[in-house]
Image 1 (cartoon, rainbow, N blue to C red):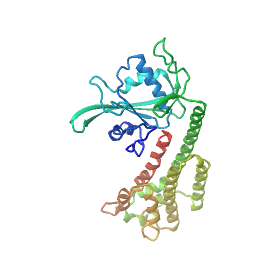
Image 2: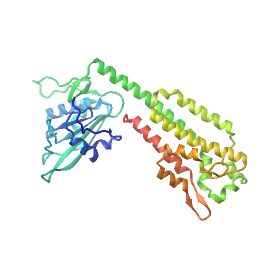
Image 3: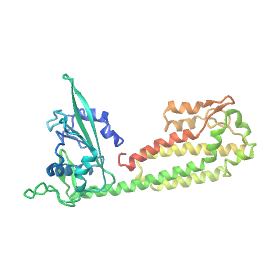
Image 4: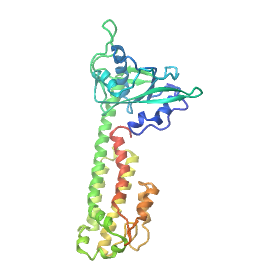
Length: 361
């Protein structure tokens, strides 16, 4: 396989990214073969058995790559950009209908058309993008024999597993099959691990309920009187610092049990988010017991809580955090709701979890 020097540097991080304009512009200029992209001069003729069986064979191999494959239609094997014919349409429904009977396993197919003005000619040409990927971790396999005509050999048999090797879609050997199913098992373990991680973060968020309520309604001028009001004091619950710390330790133990299956980047995000919410909760409990309550951005003595801010910066862009940190002037004081901050911190974790569950991260 030859990798072109101008091949994409960063893989897309979402299904829609695979057929986006940005990805198209990156791929259409590549002159070389790649594991995650392919070129076809045309997809016309999908009504014929030959075209359907050949595309199904490629799709079987494409779906067995972990990240799938994006096809640029309108580029020849020699990397000449010819565009689509006037009558040719790239349609997701038509593509799926043409090949799905040959594929055993749930798969994703997405398609789009893009127009490119050819340099030096001002001629507009249409191109197609098609993205194939299996939906779940298990490999896909042929659901039926792939035969163009009765007098020609089968392209594949029912039960065959195909892989992509360079520019060729070939039948998997025993080592390939073993690797595919091993990767499937690893992914399933990873799914269980990230689900456990997320459930622990949700449980910690539940413990924050009363704290969020207070921070979301109090302006600066109201904080000193909170501890004297039984209704608001009760919102902080009756856990001691030790009891709360024990609950946090229990959640951390659950995560540590699945730690080997959690990627380092996701684990670091989780730890930062858990530390951020845990520090907020411990601060509220300590202030309740001391009879002094201050905004979440401050330490007990009224100085800025810089360690908390540093934790937040690991999860939230500084510009966004600055807005939460400064708050909003209500006329009666500065209102600094904490719920939007925790939502923002958790969004990054959830986004990474989605990528892992979808096999993209």
